[in-house]
Length: 397
View 1 (cartoon, one colour):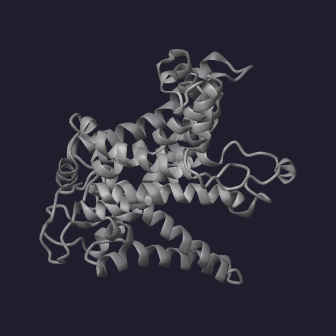
View 2 (cartoon, rainbow, N blue to C red; view 1 turned 180 degrees about the vertical axis):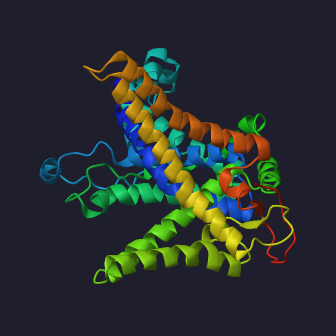
């Protein structure tokens, strides 16, 4: 358990850091998949994100735990272990197994000491560390055995150079050993993962099946796809607003407000109309806004009305509803307030958020869309072809 505990800290570190890394990776992952396939299969998400977590674990296993720089400075540099399996051979001799004495290989106690020694555990750990890499390269990336072995060797070499450089010069000299054994064992692990992959692949959908599901999902403008497009537009528009605010600091407040309104009309109505019903976010994720019958591109006024409702009116209504929920909580727990006043105030304050919720649910139930889509008479469809004619390419609301 003592040797195993040495590997637990890096794994926990990877798990803790994973949400942040996954968040940073999500938008590029979404853009690539929606542009390539038009949709994202759940299995693809599981495979790709598990691969990211595995890569983080493998990397941190090579650099953690981080020692104190002063302690490293006082350590004597360890030479590169060029001779393969020298330490493992010494451990075998120390355990009582000697090639000069063939009878020693019949000693079970010697075998037990050898198989449980620290050098053997490290060798097995280095093999196991790249077994998942071999599996991913064969299953998801569909690489050949030769390419898998070559990548396993390159990944192992990267780890060894990371250690040899003292974590890219952060430490005065290496604090981990750099040995030929690690290159051999890591590469062997990648090859072993490739060889064992068919066992797991028997129970998993094939890469072709994952692609097929993604293409099928891409035929529709799913809610998640529209949300990501909206997020891209919000980020781009916010960046433009920040830049414009910085440039117009000397302007009067009313002029800055007028410029902001003009920018909103330009970004969410004029440009989408010129781009065939696509905002920049929708263009990136291959969506377009059409009239309610999906016959022609939404007009300028439809685009303007839709986006005013989507980005201004609906968020404001939700904000007001949330605020009144807070008012209800304050009234409910207020001290020195008459009971009748608490009941009336609570009922009035609760009526507002319930009314907002009822309205959204009513529109969704009656017309299968949200207010911004219904009242602007528009829908968002998937546009997975490169052509720009006025016909519908998919379904959506």
